[in-house]
Image 1 (cartoon, helix red, strand yellow):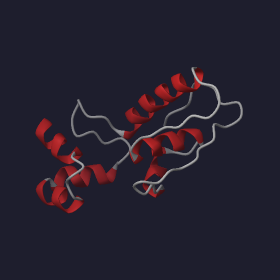
Image 2: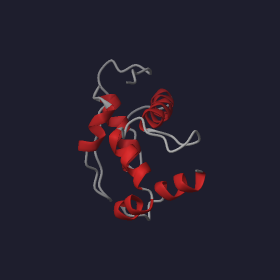
Image 3: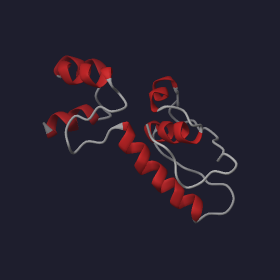
Image 4: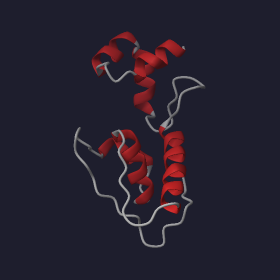
Length: 117
């Protein structure tokens, strides 16, 4: 199953290509995008948010002033959900175009812990 996960996670694959070659996996991920894992080694969006927010907490604790994060849209989406107290299912509605940026403010009173779904 690991090769299927690698194939599905490949950025060079189109949705149509994945849907055609792995229809069951594609459908299962579509039913529960936030929690879906292709296998035990894969990460879902809940896992990603925990990992990203732990690192962001470390960065905030060791920094003064503005912070610039450079990442792909999946990481930015889960961070934005956490900072805005939005459910992870909202990632489907967030749009980050390639080569653009988004300014996210750390809410007043932000503490280095957050709640996950």
